[in-house]
Image 1 (cartoon, rainbow, N blue to C red):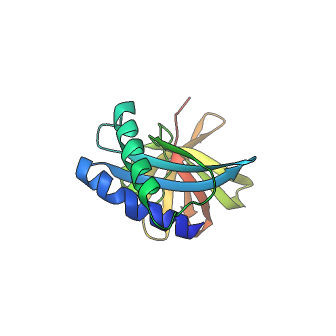
Image 2: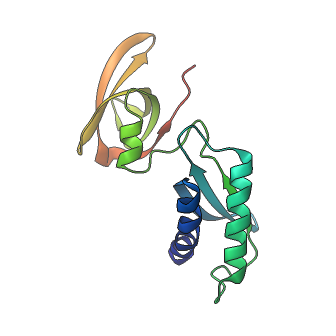
Length: 157
């Protein structure tokens, strides 16, 4: 599967660079009996459906013309925005999320909790600090980055 991702990344990056879009994530996954190739793109100010359709059309053409075929089985190509709860995948994502509300899932519980939601206030190579509420009371937690399974932007309710 990693070779599919690498090939798709090589094909999609020139399309994105030409249009000044950013690659947020690539997934090639099997769900039930079907395979899905998902390409998540964005740009400052957000991506719209016409821009997703443009990338889908251009990438679809590239994939159809590739020899050898990088994806021999049938699959569904989906090009979309990462959404309001976009994943934080790299350092630039974390930097852009400073002072924003995020959700952090942990490999191992801290204070008996495996996830936290709060405002990202501090960030270093080793850890991050969140301001969060526990039963309505403001608290602060520092989380080692090696303990973070997944992180994403979140919507505060």
